[in-house]
Image 1: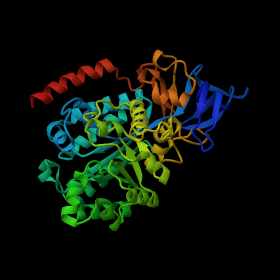
Image 2: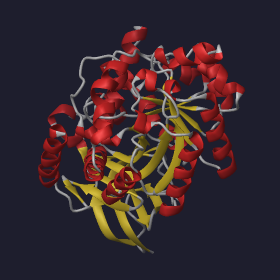
Image 3: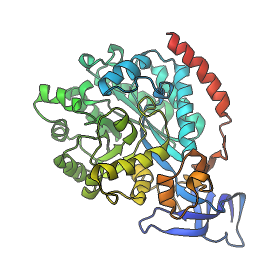
Length: 448
C-alpha cells in the first residue's frame, strides 16, 4: 500500500473513548482520511509518498474554534477596558459598518492563519455585518484560501436599534433566510465549508425572528448558533416584551435542540444547564472575552457534570486580541480553578477534549473529527514541546494546556493536507506580506 502522507515516531494522543496513547506511533493518510494508525513503523510492504518525522513530538487531533468574528481581527485593542455594550458601540459596531470586502478578506486570512499556527484545524465564523452581500463572499473566500476547515454562520438582527445596533444591520428574518439559502447554493457545501445561520443576540431578535429562522432550519436541516446569556442585558429585552427568561422563551418555541450552538452562556442557571443537557444543546465557552469585557465566568464544571457538550472558542480579536486556541485552553482551565478554589475542578485532559472531540460534536462532525482513528478525517497537529517554555514534557496534555504557545505547533494538517509546517503556510502567503497589506488597509479604515 502506498499512502500519501505519514507522520512517524510521534507520541499519539488519539482522544478516543478509551483515551488511548500510542508511544512512537505512526499515522498514515490516504486522501483526506486516516488510513492506518499503530505503534512503530508502517508494515514493511507499505510506504508513504511523504513522511514527517515526529521524533520527540506529540500528535493530537486538530483543535476546533467554535466561535469567532473574523472582521474584528482588524480591531485588536480598540474599545479596551469597557463593558460589553459600551465596547460594541466603540469598536465592533462602528468599524463593522465601514470595512470593505477586501478588508474582510484580509481579516479572514489573518484570523485563519493565526488559528492554524495555534493548532486549530476548524473555525466557526459568526458573521453579522450583513449590510453588503459582498462582505460575506470576501470573508468566505479569505477563509478558504488558507486551507482551514470552515463553518460560516450567516446571522441576522431584526431589531435592536435602542441598544445601538446600526440600522443597516437590521433586516427581516425571512430576508435573512433567503440570503442564507443563496450562500448555500453558491458555495455548494462540503465537509470543508458549512453554512449555518442564527440570531445574533437576544436584544436584537424578535420572537417572530426566532420562529422564522427555526422554521427554515427545520425544513432545510440547517444548524444554528447564537450569543446567549453573555451578560444580564441579554435577558432585559426578553423579560420586557415577553415576560419570561430567554431560555424559557427558546424552549417554548422549540429552539433548544442538538442543532443549537449557544455561545458564552455566562449566566446559565442550574435549570438552564439541565435543559441544555436534556435537549442536546452545545455550549461554546469563550474564556478570554468573558474576562476581557468583565462579563463573568460561566458554570463550566457544572455544565460538564450535567452532561452538556462544552467546546471552546476564541471570539473576535476585538474582545480577545488574538485567535490563539492554546491561550484559550489555558484560560479555560485556570479561571475555573480560581473561581471554585479547587485545582481539581477541571483537568487538562478535559480541556483538550473540549478543544477536540467536543468541538467536533458542537459543529455536528463528531463522527469525522476530534479523534485520531482509521476512517476519520485527517485533521491533526504535531506539537513540539522542545522549547524553553514547555520543556521538560512530563505530561503532554498538561504541557499543551498550561505551558505552550504558537512556537510549539510544528505542523498543522487539515483534510489530509499540510497547511502549516515549521513556520510556513502552504497557501503561499507569508506573515510579513500579509502584515504589510493589512497595515495599508488599517490606515484606510481609520481614515474613514
